[in-house]
Image (cartoon, rainbow, N blue to C red):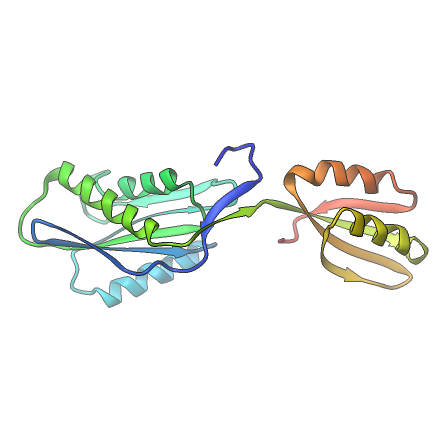
Length: 207
């Protein structure tokens, strides 16, 4: 996705297992939705146990709504013959918060670097094609702070702008956390910032 976009693409659930065969070698492909490196490690560990007699468990992952973190691993295959072809498919499909693992059972015939690159690329592509890819918006969360008499004004703006309330604490002093799509955040911030007796500030609370 474009770096200026407020959309990102990901998958909603693990893909079904896919199989690619080449000269006796079997390549099994898997795609998983992930948000942390701990989740990534767990999936890889599970596949290593499930396919304990396989030769290689190569993978690539990408994390972050802005596609900012990634890694590729050849797991003993020749340098850049496995992990990077898999990562190339993550880029081609423009997906993030995702892990793709290709498990190889060696079939007795060496494929050469070119053959390996093609096999890992095709298997990763098959796993992604079997996945349900969705587009999500990048949202900014803001905290609104105001006294109770300003409640009607604040709620009217929230309703008019169709804003999502993430959390709220109502008392004499009120706090409401709202989630705003990134491309609208500057404009909506301005509305509240210019509203008498209402404070607004961005927060790191997850949307």
